Image: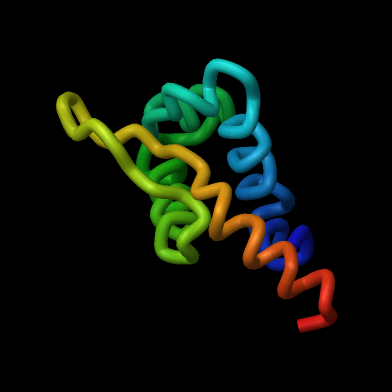
Length: 88
């Protein structure tokens, strides 16, 4: 899974998944603005990463008042990890 998520974004998507696994953040999630600020990139760049992770099923969204908050989908992450461990 590390290779898929770090290419071509130099580990950016993997870092996002890591942040979303941190205590506190795991429960409340992050907004695109949060991610942009942490990465030091524009909001559209952050949204691109978040949308890709969401389309892969690794993130889910919640709370659309003031914009979506992104959370890890732990079940899907475990499934994908298992696939890569089996040599998929």
